[in-house]
Image 1 (cartoon, rainbow, N blue to C red):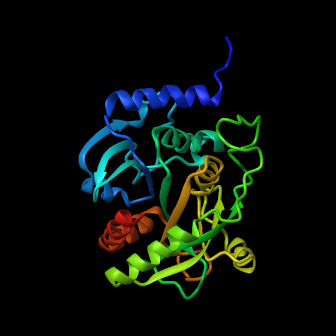
Image 2 (image 1 turned 90 degrees about the vertical axis):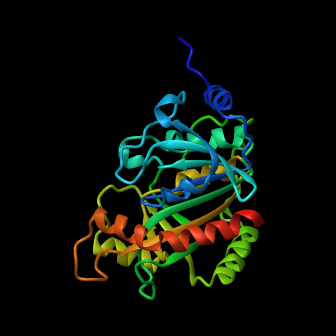
Length: 275
């Protein structure tokens, strides 16, 4: 049997979603651990479990609901991933970023991505929100490896502005409006699922990283390949290994996300009308 091209799989998934939801979203959102509460603010939502969508993987991580939600927020048409996929779940980078390809096909022009991350910058505090200015790919994986399908993007996409300067300015203005201290910094993507060692954190600090996590890089790479403008945030859910003399646990990540959810919601709601 002939194997379907990626573009054909994207088309089939998109057709399925369009049959369920009569909306053409222009903004895509990916919500990290514990931040799915934003989905509750979507007006007249259409909710589609990932398992129902052709070629979609399924979330297996606590705090990731595993649903695609389409509707309106502040007058903007959105599609939201309530829960994301990770390479440490056993999925390849191409599959992790597959939903971004589908978002593009649905009409998305702007992607807002969030994650829970460990703080490397010692001036950060648990509960801070960091505006991502750039990333370092320490996953040693890339969703663009393999034959390039030119209808999806160019062979060698430019990553000099992975995170849009324009959208970062919008985010900083929105943070000032709601009275939120917004950190800025570089995000390092590691494959996980083990947390980093203190030695790895020292290395990442020397290389210029301010926060570290196990997601985001494949999705952002695919989004830029597809010509989607990206805005990213990290919720500093813990200080990374070796900074504080304490072990790391996923429960701590979830608790930190719950602590900042009201600030996070306020910020996102201030940003969306101005994208």
